[in-house]
Image (cartoon, rainbow, N blue to C red; front, side, top):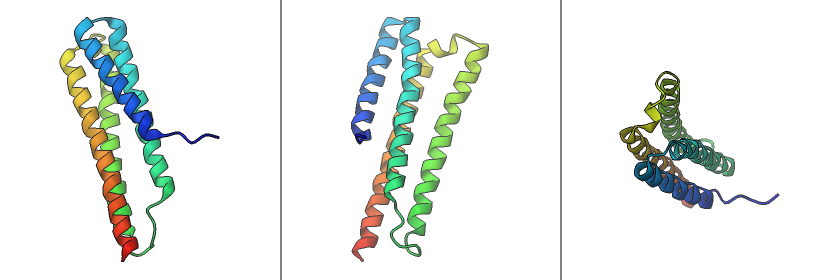
Length: 139
């Protein structure tokens, strides 16, 4: 089975997300709005798979000294993921009662910014955990 490059997939997903954002803001077409809201879960799945891949590689070099690294990494990623997913689910729940909510340009822009913050938080968390693990290995 071929290995999937999740970083490349994330870049492609973000390019697709930016393209659909621009098209949604410019064209004001229902199909483009739907494409934007379908692209969001694709990026979510790529991010979760990236986290899974990193968790699989492991942070647990030394059971006694690396527990703080694992705890910090787990807390940040869990809180960021749950907040992001809950906001998305609340938007989809509210859409059941008000079908025009997903066509609101302000909501689209705000959720795009939230997506970027979520990705930045997770990537920063992964990089910090890698740096701390490398420091622990070098001691």
